[in-house]
Image (cartoon, rainbow, N blue to C red; front, side, top):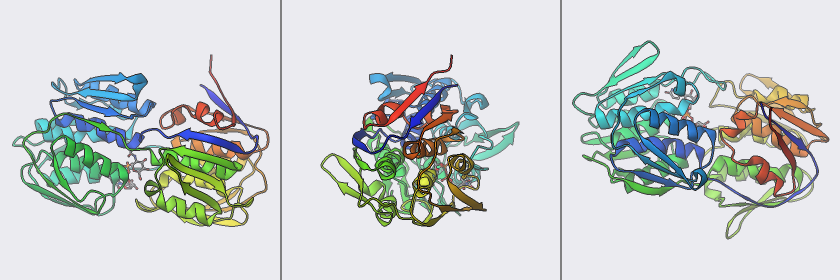
Amino acid sequence: MDTIVVTGNGALNGQIPIAGAKNACLTLMPAALLSEDPLTLTNAPRLSDIRTMSDLLMSLGAEVTALKDGQVQAISCHDLSNHTADHGIVRKMRASILVLGPMLARDGHAIVSLPGGCEIGVRPVDLHLKALETLGAEMELKGGYVHAKAPHGLRGGVIDFPLVSVGATENALMAATLAKGTTVIKNAAREPEIVDLAICLRRMGAQIEGEGTSTITIQGVDRLNGATHPVVVDRIELGTYMLAPAITGGEVECLGGRRDLVAAFCDKLDEAGIEVSETETGLSVRRRDNCIRAVDVSTAPFPGFPTDLQAQMMALMATAEGTSVLEETIFENRFMHVPELSRMGAEIEVHGGTAKVTGVNRLKGAPVEATDLRASVSLILAGLAAEGDTIVSEVQHLDRGYEQVVEKLSAVGAKIERTHAQ
Ligand code: UD1
């Protein structure tokens, strides 16, 4: 397995281009299943999760062509030869469940493996299934697979989610575009990826109102056409790279960054003494003075502080002045980076869903293991600020969500190298 070695060497300066959003792309790609015409996605990120979704769509009979080194994904679902999403692919990536709603809406039947547990928590799919049942689907669980049927097509209904789920909102939204009549989704997720999906679906001819608020109304149509859609900027990659100059000093401009995508995160950076300014081409970040102040953070669905930036924020707080409390409210097992950060000298105590972090003067490089996607990048950030070498193993987690991390950080002056396993 490859490893990444980071050697803390002071301030970072320059520009980092931010890619298209992985999580948006992972729902836009299955949206192609809703039409017999091609969907072309531009500004797609070049990541292993995108290749996994592409493999899944191809296993269903779609033609997926990666152009411009993967930055353009052209997806044609004219003929679907298979309606079963196999466990072999689904187990690699939970977002595979997002093919269920579109396949069901288009052809009235689909079989999808249950994703099973994952490293950051139990993460059931009950809300996805209940939402599709509300639209008239019949569900049966057999041998680890969901068998879904809607022989007479889906029909509109009122879906009232008991808790906010990004994926379940996406599945329901996609399915409702082809259901007969009106669907109202209440307590819908408001994430920018949902807004991006709604914009793309509208380009394909769907009738949708209210995305970005907690009530989305969809008027079903008979068919959707093809479209070309640019994927929204990745707010999590953006937030991650905004933390790089925060933790090392210097000034970095994140190209393509938009404050509205990371407003709650910017507020916390401001409290911590980190200045974020809007430029013509993105967001520029630097410390206001030499000190990072401890701030408390609680994760929440958008527009709150994203759970996907909690691990990275903890790396910053590990070197802040004072004690901060980070509360994780979305996933029950999302502190796996804590023992690894502790190996680097961070002082962190975990009690249930909260972590108390007492900042230290300087972290120290150590061999550490990436345990999940966001945890792995928090170790890279910590390594940028640490004394000596931080050797991060299991970096395949990083490849799921960060393209060219070594190149992007080297370009702003970081000492970072990837060693390829023989
Ligand atoms: C998406 C993101 C992920 C992010 C998460 C929360 C993608 C591909 N992934 O994941 O990076 O961390 O949103 O912002 O977009 N839940 C249920 N039943 C369900 C579905 C969810 O109980 O059927 C629970 C989950 O266990 C979790 C909470 O709801 O506690 C929120 O999860 P959800 O918003 O669905 O996350 P994902 O869509 O899986």
